[in-house]
Image 1 (cartoon, rainbow, N blue to C red):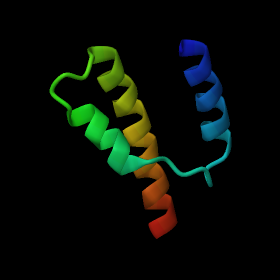
Image 2: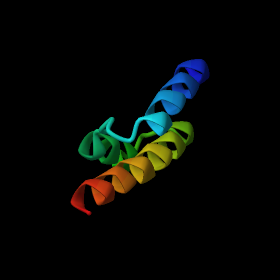
Image 3: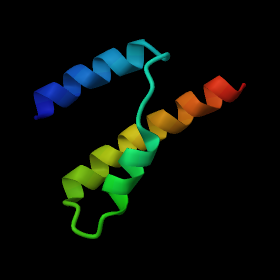
Image 4: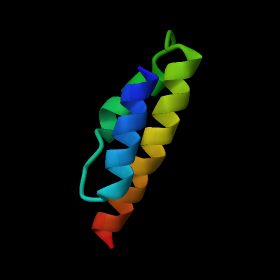
Length: 58
């Protein structure tokens, strides 16, 4: 799983036009039963998603 996420990170960071599913990430993060590791990865991708939304608005 970590290798897949590492690959995704490389691709997403290099291409700012790749969108991230902010709503779905937030749902995963806010689930009461979400494992701490899932929540931590959600935070990383939610931050990236916010940056991309801000860039599109500008």
